Length: 220
Image (cartoon, rainbow, N blue to C red; front, side, top):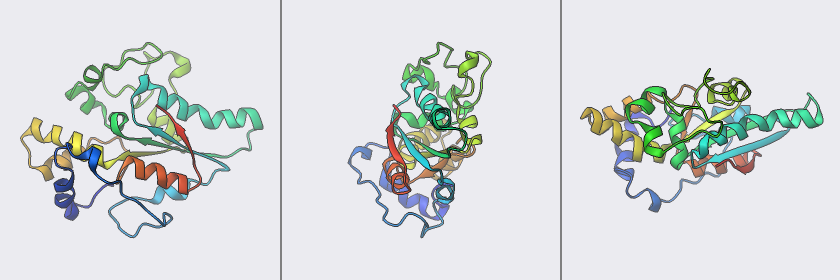
């Protein structure tokens, strides 16, 4: 998952501490079915086979609503047209929405809910941990299934922006642990939620999903 170790020094040099991120050109792809480099896990494309396909573009936390939208979309097709309807949903976490890709320990260590002022749409507390990682008993029962683990268990694909990861999260771990950039990246990678795949950038991931036939949906 993510950038190979041999390429990380060069990539970290490009993104620095993230100050230049708004000015970096997005990494573009032409042929998407097969990756020419082993640095990126593109096997998710093989699961985007549903009759109905959508990519949920998530650049913000938006009170937890992006997960709600991504989780209800497929069942709604089946509710309207019957159980035989097949769907493929791709969720792209980028910019401010990238925080959802990180595990409970990261949310608690860096107090991400407090930092972002996150308040969940259903009224449950945004702490402790990542509030949309898994089902929680303090969340109203009808909303408990709208989380990343359930989304992926149901066949959803979750992609995350490597530019945001490298420019905003790796430096956090580096400063907090007084680590080298390489060691900080390794530690940060260990805190990605299992099943989340890093892509070169969030915008690139969205465009790649669109080339695979997904309709673009603004999730936040």
